[in-house]
Length: 238
Image (cartoon, rainbow, N blue to C red; front, side, top):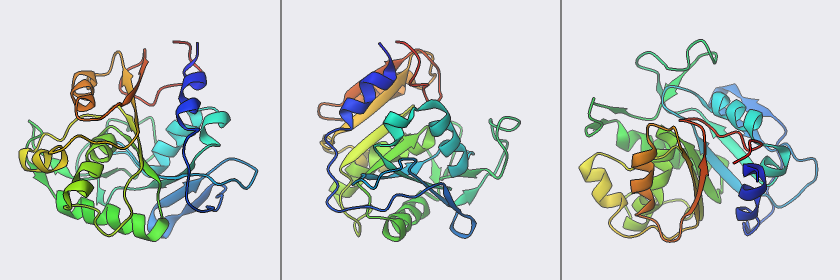
C-alpha cells in the first residue's frame, strides 16, 4: 500500500464555502508569498496556509511538497506558501541543499522553553490570513507544524487569530507541542476538535513529541511513514 493512496481519502470531505481561484505557480517577491495549485480545472479547492520549517522558506516548502506529493494529492488543495517574518539568525541546516534566503517564525533558547517574538509571529500569521485568505486550514512542517498544531487551540481560547475565521482542518508534518509553558497552557487548555492529519516519521527525532501532540486532539488521523524529519514521499510503499 502507498501513502499516496491513503492520504487523499482524508481530503475528500473538505468543503470550502465558496469558490477559490486556482493559482498557477505565482510568486510575489514583494510579499514573500507563493500560491500554488497545479490543477488545470476550476474546482472549489480548500485553501491552506503553509508554514515552513525553521530557517527555511516558503519556496523551499513548496518544492518539498511538489517534489514528494503526486498530482492527485496536491490537486485537491489550494496551497499558499509564505515566508516566516524573521530572517534566519544563524546557520540553516538546509544550506547546500536549498538556496537562501532562509527565515524563522520565532526564536527560542536551547531547551525550547523560552520564546522570543512569538506574539509578533502570531500577528504576522494573522495578517497573512487576512491578506491572502480566507483559509480553510493550515499545513505545517517542523517549526511550522508546531505553530499549526497549536493555533486552533489559541483561537478557541481567544488569544490568537481572533480576527480571522476558525481553522477547520490541520495537516501536521513532523510536529510537536509548544514547549513554552505560558503558550502551551493557552493552546492546549481544551482538546482540539477540528479534523487533523498527522504525519509521523519512524526515524524522526521529533516522533516522541509528535506522539504527545496527538493526545491533545480528538480523533486525529495518524499516518506513519518510514522516513525521518522530512516531507514524506507519498509514492513510497508503507
